[in-house]
Length: 300
Picture 1 (cartoon, one colour):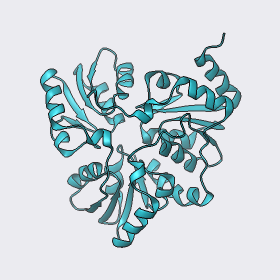
Picture 2 (cartoon, rainbow, N blue to C red; picture 1 turned 90 degrees about the vertical axis):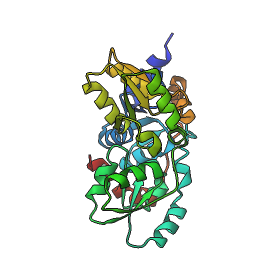
Picture 3 (cartoon, rainbow, N blue to C red; picture 1 turned 90 degrees about the horizontal axis):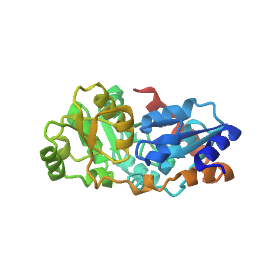
Picture 4 (cartoon, rainbow, N blue to C red; picture 1 turned 180 degrees about the vertical axis):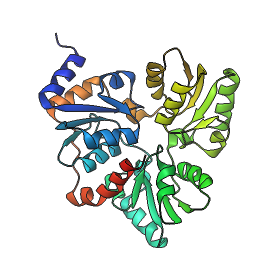
């Protein structure tokens, strides 16, 4: 009898499909993916693939970004309603209203936004290249949306830029407290501590390294240390253990993204078999969002 993994492999071949999975998905989903990574890496893979079908194991805005970069391809979401809370707090209409109040500001938008919202941006960024994106701007006035924590992290490091920050956040990263990181440091002395820049400043001030999931992974790979405290979503633990054999990783148990965890092997197989969960965007959204998203993939 054909297993779910065997079925996925067969369907991929039959339909010339590629499976992309975010670092926060479950271990079993990561293990069947052709590429596992952060938002920037996944966007780049989506833009250069020769596959006819992209199965995006992540939240909805990620599938929309893939569709914007590859409008001629079919992009499927195993869980079409796997929404990102941060993406829902900054609509295209509300961003347009905010832009009107800040004429002359360059709009830099985190990739964690809807395709429609991206049409109101000058350039997108991810946590992996946000500093480079803002540094590269000719403008000294920046409207940064929608993550105030990432925006504050950038503003502190590029003080010459005048930055207006949207009042939004990732509820998972934002809920992590200074007390939690101090407790983990007390439990695992000698560990190198690291955190995602979506965390609050009080958390970032307590760690040894700040970076995107990909940056944290690379830091672990090159470090001679064997033990790490990692302040981000717990799904990242699987990839870190897989790519850094023999090293130990400690995560805050509360850092769980329920939307990412909805994706299962059965749902991946089902959406491939029935071609369900397709991302459909209006042509004008794809047209107007393409340049901001494309610029994001070019600044690394």
